[in-house]
Image 1 (tube, rainbow, N blue to C red):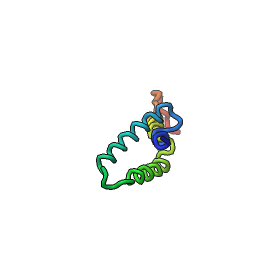
Image 2 (cartoon, rainbow, N blue to C red; image 1 turned 135 degrees about the vertical axis):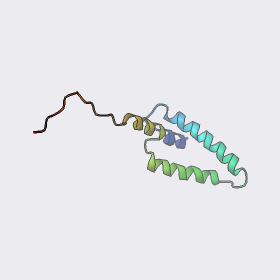
Image 3 (cartoon, one colour; image 1 turned 90 degrees about the horizontal axis):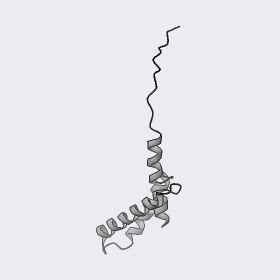
Image 4 (cartoon, rainbow, N blue to C red; image 1 turned 45 degrees about the vertical axis):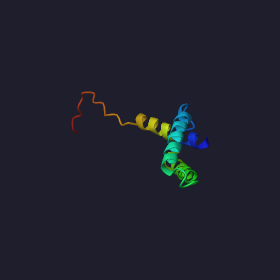
Length: 86
């Protein structure tokens, strides 16, 4: 469950829920992809993804997406007054 919390985001209330959804989807994808041919590879995939998420998304996916939308650059407001060159 730590994987779900770190992936989704610790400081956002919906972060663990999003992380759990991603974890379930990943488990099913790995189960279908590997089946019984490569037992233990799912743990390797979880470990690699956990390290990648800690490095590239330290706040989790949900909080990173929220921060991206909050920090959109706003166009400068022109008050209609132009400055004359001095």
